[in-house]
Length: 353
Image 1 (cartoon, rainbow, N blue to C red):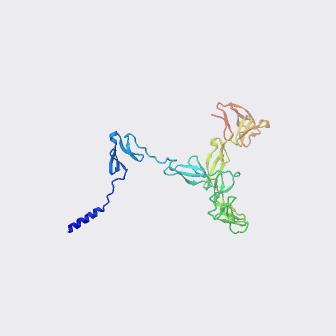
Image 2: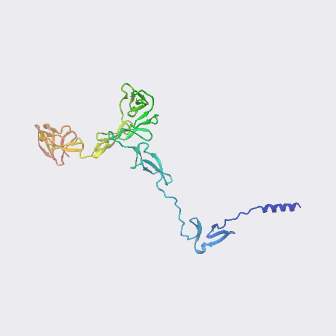
Image 3: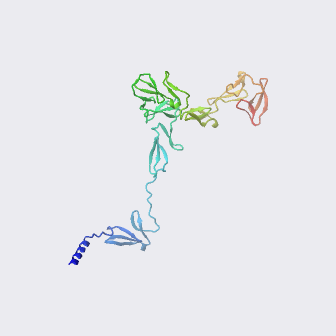
């Protein structure tokens, strides 16, 4: 009796087991080079090998195909740039994403009041300006006051000081004060305009100390402003941490420093050449002639006195390729220079070796 009950129980359990189908209807697969399809189980659909073909996936579907025909490789989206490549777009420095598929904003040069440069290594660089032509002070969209020093350099961060950058390009803080009163705050000289404090000078920029005495000024030796550019000794100099450094030698290029850049000129300003008593004088890059003989004088290759009264004994001058010597206050014919006659920096004439 117990044996019959156990057998009945086993039959009941087995009747509840659900047998999963081994494939989905119409599903295909490759078994070697035989293409099979699912019906009531897997059934052969096509013997690819019999036709000299192979079974493989092509564009997402299994089929019989030529063994020498490789399925196309999906290259995915095309790259638009090289990873980490930089470019400028409407004043914004952009960097290429790591996958090379898109550009992303790296730095907004406009907000900094700078220029996005596209020559060489792309970067945000200070915008050039010329004092006397461009605004001496201006505001960036981030509330920073900038000063024109050959390039626009940071003068004061008005937002960080709890104020705003006003229309004159300088910081202003709306606080009660007595009109005309002056004070020093954070080494900056401020003056009350009646409705608040207006920045007059940032003494730290020039390495000085703010003194709110009767005059109200920055005191002490003045250093240059970082980024400030000037012409000095026919060279372009740029200020770095309070000291001017030569950034372009105009004289070495046969040019002149004007407006803080090297420019092409017809001659070097201050130079004088003599052809007999005809002086060719260079001023502001232009040559004009002066006939010293017509003034009863002689030509001298010295900028401060291109025409002088008489010659000095034992000195010489060039007349074309001829070296003439001064005797008793008068130039006399000397010698013909095979390689030409010229002058040294002190105005001494000699034959070139």
